[in-house]
Length: 276
Image (cartoon, rainbow, N blue to C red; front, side, top):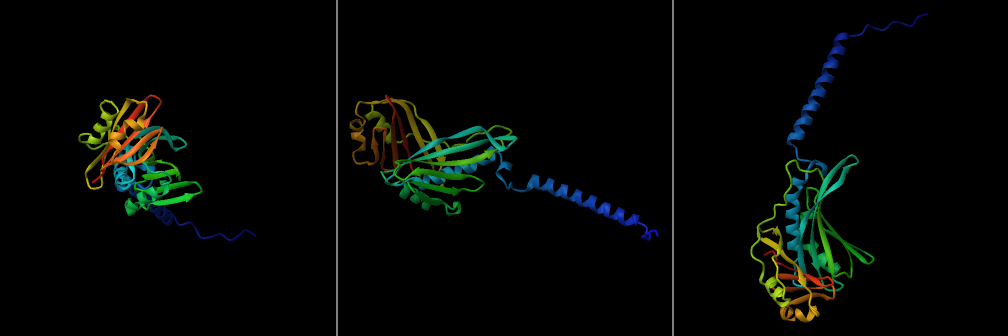
């Protein structure tokens, strides 16, 4: 016996469902197009490197302000752009990083990083953790910009890195947009005179949270004297010396940090003004 025959199909209802689905697809496409044009990016790979750099620079300025202190010396590094990182397995990008180097007395790396974390903006949610012989700091400056340090507890040189993560390259080129710095601090002239060194300094500058500029002025290739400590006696008298060993010296005179890094026969000399 043949099965009962159901009711005939309803062409109008099927057409209505087809139109509804088509309209829904069109609406989704329109919403997606509007979001791409108007919404803020929600993942780092949507923000290109040019969009990330201003946030990285502001975070570096906040870090410099937080890092300075009476028993610490600070040096600001240049912005580095490294191509070739991977956004996805088939998509390459560019990463921007900038270092702030902290010079501290022996066995003061952990207290120094805790002091830096306490002075960073609270919205960065800074965190310091110790594990065994190491101490680490992490902070989130927003827009996928991170601040990180990982150091031995007994280190006297601690590098804090501000990084953008891997970003798409900018279509029209990328500039670091550093602020204009003023004249080198008097402490740089004094230390170069003490070392019989000369040279035109390179400058790495950031904007402090209050709008002022802090900068590191560096002179490379200064001839190394036979006795570095003796040569620096005239400029370190009355200063706060935070590091003094064959690899180099670091001291703070007033609000200026001075760092002298030694190689076999040459010195790198830098002086950094503080954020007000």
